[in-house]
Length: 262
Image (cartoon, one colour):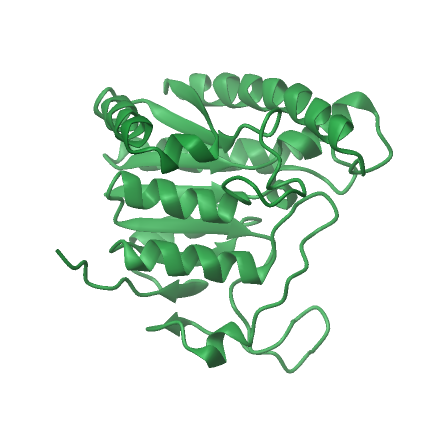
């Protein structure tokens, strides 16, 4: 099975911005095991700015663009070092792929990207993908490029004809209300179609170190399902849930794909 998995900053780091070592080690172990079982995986990983904040000893997510981009440059280096080390312990090779809007919008560059990602998968490599936040600015506050990594992961999933996109978040899925504020909120397990009622359930707030909220995840679902890919929102604090997802268990919220039109 070809699966695109997106992991958010809140899953990779503590609230301090420093790496959540136990969490990241567990995630890499599960992903390595899924690859050992014959699955093809692509990992869209947030966390560069958050990790840069921790590495640089900053008090929190910067407010000015230059420092955000500097933190991204420092954090991306640290992020890939950790992924290479951890996946290497399980005998899996990784590749870094940093993208800007032009890479997916320009037909020639998009075709080259598809060719590269497909060949990496054929070679058994796990591509680790992020927007190039050191030069792109949309995710970090300017509406000019791809956007947050929820949308990026949906674009990538469609580009490589993935069968499933899994967004690992700090919440179990889509709820009828914000479960952190409303104790009566219930999990929506299946979304056959993105109706106005479903959109109305979303909120726009993310965590202190991340950039996405439920609205961005519904936008990702809109992109992914239109390209013939199911999407699931699940809690990234429990990477073992990926086993259940691949076994067909009901975990998180599943958005059903639309049939592709020719």
